[in-house]
View 1 (cartoon, rainbow, N blue to C red):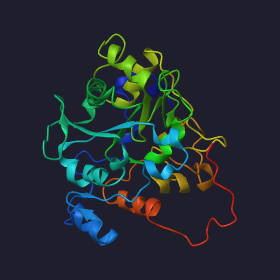
View 2 (cartoon, helix red, strand yellow):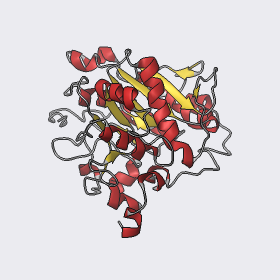
View 3 (cartoon, rainbow, N blue to C red):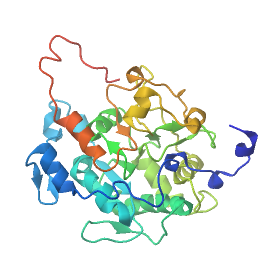
Length: 323
C-alpha cells in the first residue's frame, strides 16, 4: 500500500467491498423475469406463494450432530429500497429461510416485504451509520433470540449449515467475531462486510452497550465494515481465525469464480490476510460464504449446493475434511 493511502484516516478510505458495485443501477436492471418466474422454470413447481419450499438441510438432517442443529443464528441483511425485489427477495427464497431469525435493514420501512427502515440516507458516505444501526437494531430486538449474529450484504450467499458447523467449536459467551480477514487499517485487521461476518453474543452485548459512544466507535462515514472492525477492537473483541486446519478459506469477499481462478482486483492483494490464494485447493470443503452472487446468481448456487446429486460419487471415498 502506498504511503499516501496509509495517511488517509480509516473513515475516508474507499471500501473495497463496494469497489465493483454500481451506485446507479441495481443488479438485474432491465430484466423482466420475476423471482417466481425464474424459480418456477429452474426448480419446476417448488414455488409457493412469495417463497419457495426449501429442500436444503434442516435441523432434522443433522442426525446425531445435535450440538450443531441447536445453534441459533440471527441473520440481518443490509439492503436498500431499490434492491428488495432484485436481490433481497432471492435471499428470502434461498439461504434466508435457514436462519432462525431474518431481518432486512434498509433506509425505508417496507411493511409488506418486510424491511426495517433506519433514519439514514443511502450512499457510500452513510455505510457506517447503516452498518452500526443494523447491529443496534439486532441487539435491541433479537439479542435473546439467538446465539450468534450474522450480517450480510444483499449479494452475499450464506451456507447456513456450514456456519453452524464452524461455530459449534466456539463459546458464544466469549467475545469473538469471524469473517474474511482484511489485514489493513487496524492492528487486528477487520472483516470484509461483503463476505458476511458473524459475532458472538458477548461481542454483540459489548457493542450494544458501548457502540453508541463516538469516543469508542466511529459513528459516520464510508467503509462500514472497517468502522465496525474498529469498534470491535475498541471494545476488546478479537477477530478470530476462520480458515480451516489446512489454511483454506471459509468466508469469501468475492465470487466463487474469482477465488477459484484468482481473478483478483489489485486492492485484494493488499488487504487479504491469507496471501490471496487461489484455486479449488485454497477453498475449504465446507465454505461458509461467497460475495457478488446477487439476484438470480443465488439460484445457481442454491441448485448446485442443495439439489444436485452425483451417482456413486462418494462410494468408497473418505469424508471431506471439516476441521
